[in-house]
Length: 166
Image 1 (tube, rainbow, N blue to C red):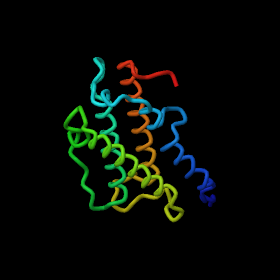
Image 2 (cartoon, rainbow, N blue to C red):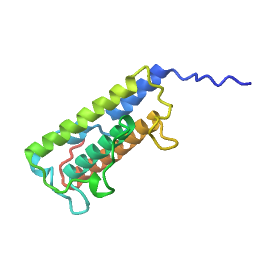
Image 3 (cartoon, rainbow, N blue to C red):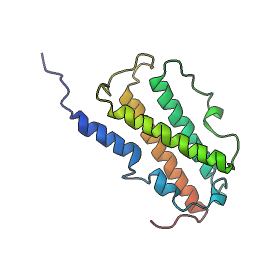
């Protein structure tokens, strides 16, 4: 019988996942995507854009929170789709903007801590998840979703004339 022992260096895998979640690499990271953004543009929609920068960021926060909580909390109930994944207003107050940023960062840090847990086999299924849902799947889903919407934020900034070549 063949040996099916994993040969992947878990340290390398975990660090590359952390870089994927936080580092940008082939796309802008959150800090870069928001650098120098005039607060008056946070809630403005470009003529060709369905959402504002704030709406995209709050959507990222809500989706990331849902993916994380679903993964670690068997009692978590996901919000209704799609209305539970988008903010009700376009234009945030300063407090809402700050809460959005802080919430996104806090959940991202919790996800990174989960990835770095040596006692957690990333390819294992979590007991309360649907069939095929592994910790690794959830991390990749979050990274993919965040990368897509960070790209949308950059596009909105370009459409608003608020993106300088970096």
